[in-house]
Length: 525
Image (cartoon, rainbow, N blue to C red; front, side, top):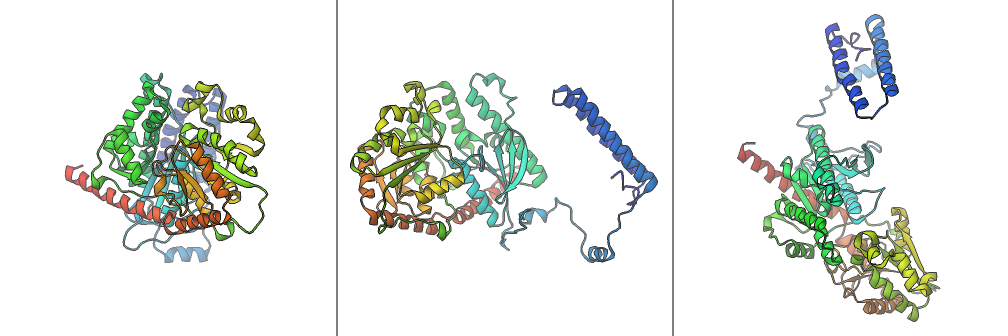
């Protein structure tokens, strides 16, 4: 602006005003950085010197040399022949689909319904973490983008940065814990409330700069609570397992977790709309949180995933010789995931099927679920001390990358996850996607995902003997392994597809946005 202002036809007073405004904005900011310890005095002097030198250089060229940057004649004719460029924020820009700035891909857009501008909250997000909520949000973002919508994801990181990743603008924000100081002694409550507030501040900026229309938040750790209480935008809540539910399973009676459960209760009761993934999830929420959701305030939307390419599918081959048979478990090592039941089942399986091999992928959560306090050991160490004879054929992999996880699904022969409760169980879909038979429990929403006798087998929770018998039965039935796996793969294509999920979410978002705007107009806001 300084360098080319006069050359482009601006008057000197306008250029001088720009210089004054720049100084008024930047130098107090630098002093604030120094005061807060963000920069040293040496850095401050360097910043000031470079800015003054750059400004003087630009002013010299702009006032005395006045260079003009003339476009080539052909380019100028092309510019003159087209309509002028519109400003970024206008009525039309809200209806323009997002374009991938890397590949240039622009998704197809409905001619009747304008694209939406959606903000998804997710405390964790790939590629840094691949937990259930993170993977689901990632799939939602990809599906919504491919349907033509603009998607912003707000997630947590050590520093603030924005990237474009798989169809979404991913905004990583730090959890600056400078509020709710009276709750510092309740660290988990203190951290989650501060993060909810930091997410709200990011939502405010996205509303101002990008015109987002709705916020979608997972129920876990009530990330959208502060945004909901602000009334700034409509907030829909994806119902997943809550803290109060987990505490009941683990038997926790700590005051801090009770308070966090109370915040979950408020989040449920005041949300603009609820999105349970199964009927079982909704019923469990009604029971645990003792609330009633009106029929027009919720819709059951099953999760969906991206179908793997056909050349990546590895159905079980009953005609091939198998020296070993691999049983895969994916999930955190904790009581709720049925870890101890699986541990007890493994030696029983090996007695009857000694060529079995077990691979367990997932981080140890013994510190948080109270197991380490009770036993003095984490889960892998506990297994090693309790069942040392099984160690040669049991592999604990810890947390793994998405690429490694897909290879594990591809190469296993049977997938087992004996969770005591799952609101849905995305892991079952991931295994079925690679044509793998699955074993789950009759608990939570799992029976709505795993079709017993068709795509997998269901056993009762906390029944290690029945679990072991089912594992052995399937390992001894090659034809059934193949049939169950192929049926599960077909269900992914027919029912649990990420585009079906995204389309259902988008239709609900439109409804909620319309009702929210109508209510505002009626109240005169």
